[in-house]
Length: 306
Image (cartoon, rainbow, N blue to C red; front, top):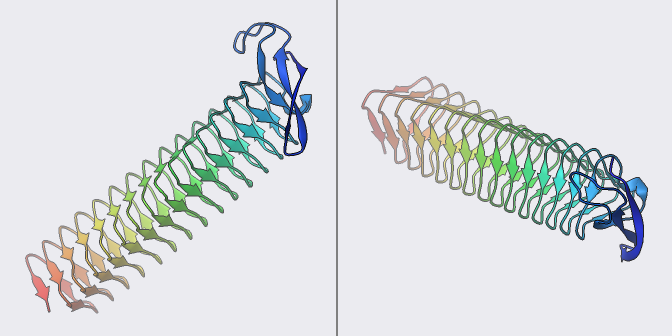
């Protein structure tokens, strides 16, 4: 238990009076008797073995408890709760009804708010924002200017960076990497070692998995699935119930739709369209303005171009 008292040193924050705290008994983690800490509004803000350091501030109905630490210029306020062995430091803010627990860390200028839950050994830093009813867990890292909102879930060892936006009921897990100006939303899933970058969009109930890459301004949506080592790039579109897999590549302004499948080392590029129940596989090439539809199969070393 951390034994401390409120000192006479006070400051005003958001119309509230906060008091600097001071240890009244030696503590094996927080320091010797007389060590000054940060600022809290009342003893209801700080209980258990937790402590507030430096110029950090905890106020409102916020609670820092268990073995949690708040330091630097960090702020925890409103109805927020920081517990377990969580750490909030730098200029980070945890507010509204947000919860930070486990061994999670919030640092830099990151903000966690709304009803967001950041837990386990996850980490939000730089200018990251985690809000809504999101949950960030596992070893996930949210950094740079990334935003996680609504009901999105980030877990495993996933990394979200750049100015990426993950929202809706999207789920990102495993070792997935989302970066750039990407949007992942709806009920989309990105997992395993998949990468989504550039200005790409993944939405609907689409899935990107394996070591697949979706980049540049490509879009994967509706119930499409891109997996294995497949690459979808440039302004390509994969949608419907289409599947792109193995070492295939979809590029330029090509579109794969319906229940079409592109796999093996096939390439579809240009303004080509593959739709219906068509199959493109082997080392086949479909390019230009070619239209492969119905139950057509393009295989082997075939080349289709218009």
